[in-house]
Image (cartoon, rainbow, N blue to C red):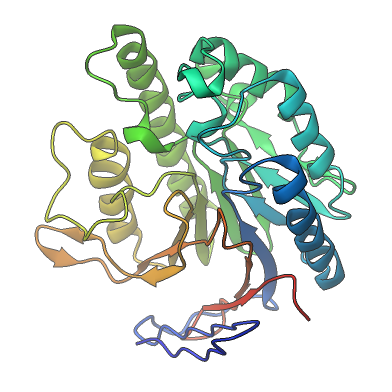
Length: 323
């Protein structure tokens, strides 16, 4: 059950309580911020409101911020200069910020209006620009583990990260829009997809194993893609879906087996959603909650409070640049 409080013509706040989860003991509530799909558009129009939002984030002094990717729109150039500008934006966060890539940064860069780049070359540029082994971005970075370090067999995937905050494990997965780059007509894209999908599955399985061994009370997973592409959740993911293995065959079964609260945060579709859309064998998996953050022209962020001692572990509040 969820409770929503909103103000329609200004700053809107949303409080959501999920009452179906069992009581769980734990540490003090944790507060962090999630956002994504921004800045979108020409710098003169998109940068000022995004920078103002960063200042609002700084005022709230969260434990850290998670940016779920798409640091540029799908119709702007994938230049090194654009990447440098977004690196400068991450440096404006006075705390720590953890970033996971979106499709606009690399998979879609082959488009003429993106500059006609080789997507795989742009992916390497993203990794070189934004990821550093062992630490996040931001003025006060936190320590993270990277899949490239923890699992040498997946040495390319420095962008897959994880870190602990009290009794909560946080994990990022490199899962992007545009069907996760599963473009059947493009052999290079298909090969890239299968390799990254295997790495993501291994990283997620290990995350659940870590959470179980260390007695985590909750697990938070962040990625860019909306696995439903802003449509009603289907009964099952099809064989043509780039999300079938990582979500339908890995995340949902593991979460159901673990039986503790799991929050999946993503962007991609640019509208606020908080729900429990996942099913297994046609039955809802109620311990998995999905938070889709706003984005694009909706320049707002989501403050998430996690209280693992409560029957209602997830509380969210949306805020923008207006006081």
